[in-house]
Structure formats: C-alpha cells, structure tokens
Image (tube, rainbow, N blue to C red; front, side, top):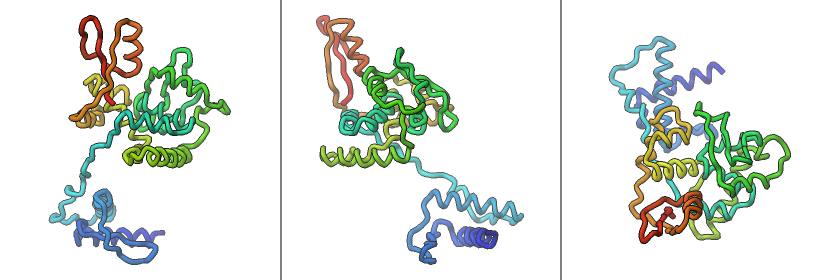
Length: 278
C-alpha cells in the first residue's frame, strides 16, 4: 500500500500549494475530480495531514500558507424539539422503541450508554438507573426515573442480561421507520428531525431551563468539563413559550405536579399555580 499512500500524500501536498480552499473531491469510482469542494472538516484534516507529512520527511513548511484558518470548524447550535412533539413520537412508537425513547428523555444519557444497560443497573424498588460504563470518558451517574418508565422497563422480556436485546444499528433502523410513520400521520415534518441524540440535547436544555445551574446540568450529562455544557445556555431562549398550567390545593397534588415536570409559579387565594412548557 506504500505507493498508494505516497500518492495520497503528494495529492495533499499539491492541494495545499494550490490552496485547500479550492480543492475538489476525487471520485474513486469514476477516477475523476468532481465539481464538489471539500467540506470544512476535510480541509482541516488535509492541513493537519500535510503538516504531519512535512514533519515526517523533514520538509520545510511554506511560511505563506496559513494553516490556522483550516483549524476551526463553525459550531452549530443543536435543534431542540417541543416536549409535545417528543411525547407524540414516544406515544406513536412500538413498545421497545418507545421505552428506549422515554429512557433517553428522562435521563439524557447517550444512546450507546442506554443500549449497554443491564438489568443489574436498574433498581426497581427505588426506581433508579445507574450508569457505570459511560461513553466518551464521561462521569458515572445515577438517575431517578418515573413510575411509568419503570413499568415499561419491567414489561420488556428478560431474555438475557441486557435490557435492550437489539444492537444499536437495528434500533436506529426501527426507530427511523416508526418516527417517519408518526411524522406522516401527524403531518408534522419536525418530528422527522428528532434523533436519539436530540433527546440528550432536549434533556440538557430543559434541565438548565428549570434550574439555571450549569454545574447541575454538567453533572446530569456526565461532562468532565463545563465547556461542553455551556452550549445549553444559548438554547434556553424560549421567546414564544407556551405552557400547560395546573393548580394545586394539597401537598399530594404538589408532589404529583412536580413529578410530572411542572414548576411552581405563584399562589393566589391559597391555590398554588404550576406550569410546564409544551
């Protein structure tokens, strides 16, 4: 493979000298250059590969080439759906996928962490789930889950140690088909934009919306540094907020509303008023 690798390195070198900004994609199937330009990530990777190539062969790097301009990648804010859209999607999916989605909604864990859950990670008596094998060097964490999610998890067949018997690729295929079906049925194309990772962004956004505490959100998401958590301060800007409202006359009703995600607003004539974003 050395001649091919050497040829690729020479192509990278030529691209740098000609200007990575104007580099075109090579179609390996048709053996010709296409009109499509490189993405920003490709430009960044090519510039780093060329620098490594020069260091390996002790080639002096041209001073007139500004490698730093390809070093960054524009960051986009993740899209966050409405809670009503998430709930409609969960209600429209079949039992296994619906349980998986509700788990992601209530915990904000990564889908890879959820698919690796075992029955020993779930404490049914105290309704808690523990993540001891987090992804991306995240911190281990524990979540309190609702009675509804506990019941849905208990209803799943216990064929082996794993909670979800399918691999992540199969889960994604089934989810995509069911999600698109729900979006068509409800005539809401926004639902088609929801992915497994979207629910992690939704969870982080809602946690910061409720608490305004970045350290709390960092701990809930398992981030080792708060830099990754700062993005949720930009997402919480609900200019056209719409809320469900509810009232309470007793301590028991207060507890039920808080468990359902409502937040306390005020009290009038001895009646407490709560709200929850739609």
